[in-house]
Length: 99
Image (cartoon, rainbow, N blue to C red):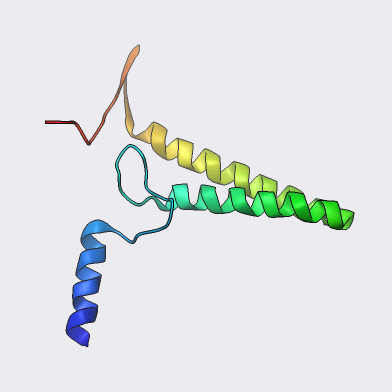
């Protein structure tokens, strides 16, 4: 049993944990920042529907919208950090170049 757990941990260390719909389109690897952006978007949709049934949830919905905005900005900042700036020009590196 410990061997199976060790094998599972080694595979996840090498390839990362698999989240549904959370693969970064650039690196083709799991991305926790993209997962959080998806999750906060779903929560925003739920909050929007909840406001229709109970208008007192406006403050809670605004907090969820702010969280969604923050997660999307965090994901975009991570994408910008992958870009290399050099004076007046910049280069965006693609790790998955076709050979």
